[in-house]
Amino acid sequence: MLGKLIKHEWKRLWKVPTVLLALLLALAVGTGLTFSRPVLESEAVGLDIVMVISGLIWITFFIALVGISFAITIYLALQFYKSMYSDEGYLTHTLPVTSVQLLTSKGLVVSIWTVLCSLGIILSILIAGSMAVHSFPEMDWQTMWMEIQTEWQELLIALEMEGVNMSQLIVPGIIGIVISVFYGTALIIGSLTIGQLARKHRIAFSFLAGIVISWLVSALQSIIQIPISFQLTFNQSLGIFPYMVGSLWIQDILYAIVTVVLFIVSNNIIKNRLNLE
Image (cartoon, rainbow, N blue to C red; front, side):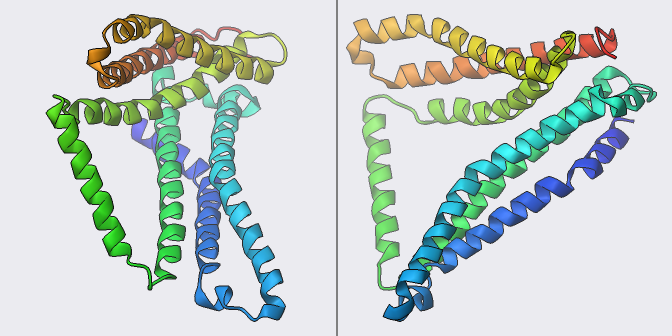
């Protein structure tokens, strides 16, 4: 049954985010084309107009990088609210499924779209960047890339000489990326669900709940990191690396705990119909 719920949720949501990401990729191509020779070597008469249009395309692309991600997040949040707590939600709660299955299916789809949105942003930047790079063949990009690789290798050697293992930083970093996806989803679902406890202005209360939860998590993370900060302050020989590793692990563990707590709280509210209409 969970598979059917995920399939239905995917079919219900895929169109709008797909169109928005396709628009972002189109803007990336358009931005890359502004670096092409025909555009850069336009006749002097029309150069001002071409540069103005190119500037508008660049600005639109940079705004879209942030705006489309935000728009997809808002869309997914509103669709979750609509399917769970509006008139449509009444039919959702009559399905022969558990609240855990409902939350899991909707949460997984939101998480998948969060990942796809991030990949779409990265891909659009790579498309625009690679088109811009290929527009200047006279520049020795290969040599520049080799220099960057050489500097990176020198940095790794310097860190190893200080007893620093990059895997100690990479592992919690990768784990943190994965956990952050589910944490973001849990924050959206949890905030909207907690917002249903209010008698009026539930959307506003949901937004406020999200802000409060985010602030509490950040404050708690800062408090937990205080001992590490003191140790770094009084023992300068440790360097910044142990602080970075410790901070990443603290954030990973804290995000994981909050994600589970929000899921349990949301499930309890839905399961027990606490103030749900």
